[in-house]
Image (cartoon, rainbow, N blue to C red; front, side, top):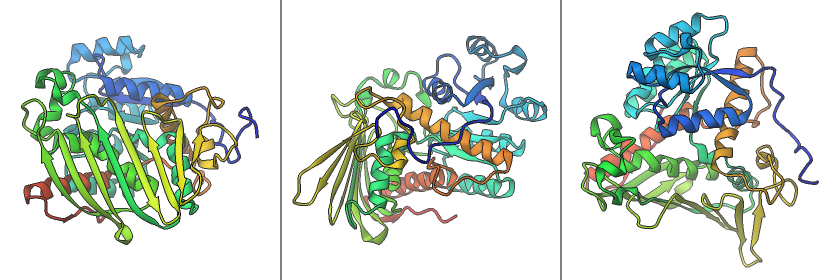
Length: 398
C-alpha cells in the first residue's frame, strides 16, 4: 500500500462541523490555545463560544481575538452553560482549560445543561469529585473526554496494538520517564503563566506528579493494557524553592504482578519534554520517545531490531494508520496528536447526538474512567510519600 492510500477502517466522514465552546484559554494562556489549535486541526470543530477568562475585560478582549460573536463571548461560565444549551445553534461540547481546582465545577455545570465535555488533565483533585462525575455521566449518557494528548500519537497507537496482538509476548516489565527542566528557574519565572501549579489548594497536594506524572501514568496503562495497582513514591524538591515537589521517583506494580518504574522531574537540567516508555515482554521490547514521535522501536528477543516509521504500509497497523495524515518522511508531531484526539472526540459526540453505534474498538480516546484513574494515581503517590515511601494501592474503584 502506498502512503497516499486510505487505511482500512478509516474514521467516518462528518455530517457537519460540530460547535465547540471553550472555558479558559484567554489572554494567551498556553493550554487553551493548544486545545483550540487541536480542535481546528481536526477539521471537525468550529469554535463558536467561550468564557475565556474570569476577568470580564480579558474575557471580552480574548473573545474578539478569537473571532467570537460578542453575544457568545461570556464573562462567566455559569452563564455560558444554560445560555448555550437553550440556543438552537448551541455548542455541542465544551473544552475545559481552567486550573485544576475548577475542573469539577465547570464540568458539572455543563453536564447539567446536557453538553458533552472535553477536559484538560488531571481530571479533578479528589476521588469524591471523580466519583461524582462518573455518576453524572451514568445519569446523562454524555461523552466525557480527557486530553491525555500523547496517547493520540500514531506510533503510540501502533505500540498499543502490537502489545494487544502479542508482538512482545507476555508483559514482564514497564518503565516510563518524563523529564523537563523549568523548575530550575526561579519560581516566579518557572510558573509565570500558571502560578496555581504550585498552590496546594488548587492542585490537590502535588505539582509535578499531577502535571506530567499523570501523562506518564496514563501512557503506561494505555500502551500496556494493564492497570497500575500499587506504587511507592518519593517526592523531592530539587529546583527553585517552592511548596510542592518538582521530582518524584516511583516503583510500581501492574496487573498480573508486572513490576515497573515511573520517574518524573521538572528539575532535570537539559531536558525539554523527555517522555519515554519501554515495555518488555517474553518475546521482546517496545520503546517510544516523545521527542522522536515518528518512530517506534521493536526489539525482538535475540533477533534483529526493527524501527517502525509512521506512514501507511511497511508494518503499520490499523489503529495507527487512522492517524496518518502525511506521507512517510513528512513529519507529524504533538500538534497533530492534539488534532487526532479532537477528531476522536468529535466522532464520539456526533455519534451520541445522532443515536448511532460506532464499531467496537474504532475509538481509543481517554475518557472519564481514565481521568478518574489518574486522580487515584496522584492521591496514592501523595499518600505513599507522606508514609515514607510505603507501598499503597492506586486503583480506582468506581
